[in-house]
Structures are given as C-alpha cells and as structure tokens.
Length: 527
Image (cartoon, rainbow, N blue to C red; front, top):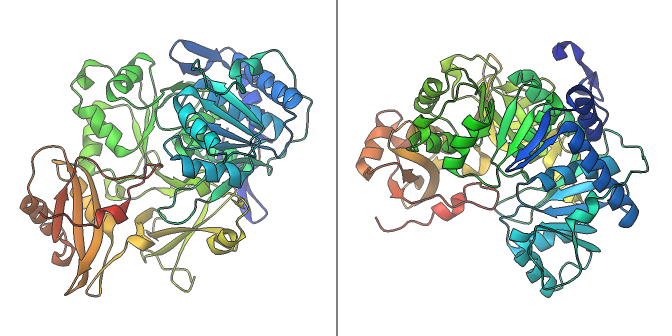
C-alpha cells in the first residue's frame, strides 16, 4: 500500500485517508491478519495477537462491570515494563477510558500531584513500586482513588488491593462508541521548573504516529522490536509498542535496560528494530560480550534524544551491516515523532533530525512569530494530527503553548533548503558570551566526536567579564584531561565557543524522565 497517496487534508491538517478509527480497531485489524503471530513476549510469556485481544477484552469487561469504568474515566498506571501494562493500555482504549501512565522514577509528591490533577479513579501498581503508594496512602493524599490493583505477588499491609488476576476472568464489553478524536492518554511532561503538565493525547494522534513510523521506516509484520526504554514514555509506548501493533510485528519487553541482557535478546529473539538513545548503542558496542552474538537480523536502528556522532554511526554500520539508521525527533506533545530521518541520507545531513513526518507541518519562526528563511534559526512550531489536544485542566498552558494549531516546541531549530530539520538548542539553553550567541548543542556535537567522551553537556555559567562563558560537563569513556578537551573543541569551533571550564563526572544528573538537568550542572566545582 502506498500511504503517500492516501494523505489528504482534514481540518487544516494532513491525515492518512485509510486509517483505523481508534486504537482498539488498530489491534483488531492485526488480529485479523496475523492472529497466530506473537504480539507480546516477556520472559516465559509469549502472547499471540489472538491471545492478546482476548485478554484485553476480558480486562475491559471486568473493569466495566465490576468497577463501572466508563468512557472518559481516568485510570492511573504506576507499573514498570511488563505485559500487564500493555494489556491495560488497550483495555482502556476498548472502554474509551483515559490511561495515565506514571513515571515510576518519580517521587511520592510528584506522583500524588499527577494522580489528583488527572482525577484518576483507579490506580494500578506493581509490587516494585508498592512502597510509594503505601507512603501516599499513609499521607492520605490519594482520596480520589476508588480502587487499587496490585500486580505481582508481594503482600501489602492494607488488604484492599485487588489482584490483577481477577480482571483476566472471562468477561465481555458492552460496546460503546469510541471516536478517533476521543482522549486516549494523559501523559505528564517533565519540565525542570514548575508543575508538570498533563498532555492529552488522542486515538487519532497515536494512530498517525504509528503510521508515520511504518511509512518512513518501512516496517511490516516481520518486524520484531526490543523494548527496553520505559513504556510510560512515548518512545516505548508509541514508537515501539503501538508501532508494532500497527504493522503486526512482535514486541519483546525488558523490565529495564541491562546491557548484557539487551545484547543477548537482540540476537536470540532475532530483533530487527532497535530504538534507543545513542548512549545505549555505545554501551552495547563497548561491552565485552558484544562480539559474541549475531546481529544480521537488525534492519532498523532508530535513535533520538541526543546527538549521535559520525564516529558512532560508522561503528554501527560496521556491526549492523543490514540496518538503516533513523534519527527521530519528537516530544510527548507530538505523540512521539515530528521528524524522522529517511532510510537513505547523505552523510552531510548526519546532524539533522530528519524530515517532517508525512502528515507533519513544521515551520521556524522568529521572536515576532514570523516565518524564518531557510537555514535561519528560530523557534520550531509543529502541526499535525499527532499533536496533543492540549493540557488537562490547564488553560494557561493551552493559551501559551499553541499558536493557530501549531504547538510551540521551545526548541531553536533551522530547516535547510532540502527540508531537513536541525535542532540547534533549547531556547533557554542559549549561551550569550559577551553578545556572541552560542548554541550548546553545537559544542556538544563536537564533544561527541571525541573518542574518549561517552556523554557531554554544555551550559552557560556566570562570568564577570563576558556575562556568560561555556562550561562542559563530561562523562569520559577513558582518562582525558581538561586541556585535551579544550584543544579538541578549539580545532573545530570558534575560540569563544571553547569551554572555559571542563568538569568530569561519573554520570549526568537527570530528572525522572531522563532529561539532563542543566541547572544542576551550572554549580561549578573547584577544578
């Protein structure tokens, strides 16, 4: 099927003409085509598409009949990567309920805010995170929760947790009308300041994102992915799980990333589609067991969230000779991808995050919201059916974050004459050194080219003479000194972009969503 011929305009956005009407229909279409094929795999559990749908229907039916879950109800999920998470998401879609995936790395105070702000009626928790829920219940901060479900075998001090297994008993769903514009999830964005915002994603957005991936990456029912990133993020949830359901592929699920296990499963499960941050690929290749396995099945290597150096890409090409490489850029608010690098691209475009997705409309604007010329830097605005409907119960954020149907990304970007998009920096991360503007990502890209650098972050720190100067914080692969770093940058960039300060750390500080906390890096240590 040539989906490009099926794109047309609807409500001022491009959409795929032939698309599932909601997420559960997308699953049912794959059940019809690939019913006996494995859909979900984890440890010793291997569910076919038929078995997956059967379990989804039973869970939805029991939620509807015993807990009176109805369309629009919010269901919070504090669950790590497992098959139950996947089944719950589709059971909610079946009922028209809105699932609220909670970041399992968050602290109790943050979780309490999200559960209350979303107005969730039911909370699912697996036994690893039960202590967090028990602490919140001791504080009596979850008064809107009517039912608690526990996944796993751990016993709780309270006796009112319902076992997940009761939802798997035979049941059926009284059908209700679920439209593609109905809310599907509320996913909280992880800002470094202020309260999190609950982005409301629709069936329409999740389906179009899945189809965007399918079209650009040319995946089909032979695809198998290995999900090691959290399913509570759009990459794991939409870029992998929903994407595989769309094409009839298989999702092999890891509880959490462990390099040795990831390498082994990639080979043993004949994984063809990998999607990770660049650091994961570097960790794979330096692991002593890496060369012991065969990776000839890998056809797609996708990455995002950080720049990938040309050196790393050269190494990956050597070890994964049959793979196409796809940089992807997106956010919670774009339901995963806004841009994807096409299958074949010139090495001169390696710093790009790719072309707009087939149904995406991207533009760069200046401070007056006027369109920028090609290669001119400004704020990136994004429009399309994959953009979230807005933020849950947050009119102020809705007013400030959208402009004429476009979502304001807060990213500084440029689009070249060929349409390739380059993320230059976050607006707030721009460094002003005596009037000279420095984009931190430009310096970070150079540092990632150094063979001794594993991870790097650039921040601006106060300076009496220039106002701000450049500081580099580096996680080294091996011993490296400050002057070597400075000389390396000086040979490639203007002198005012060379870090005045260089600090080495064991790891970069990150928030619960994995984003680097650059404010924490600005506190200089004595070197």
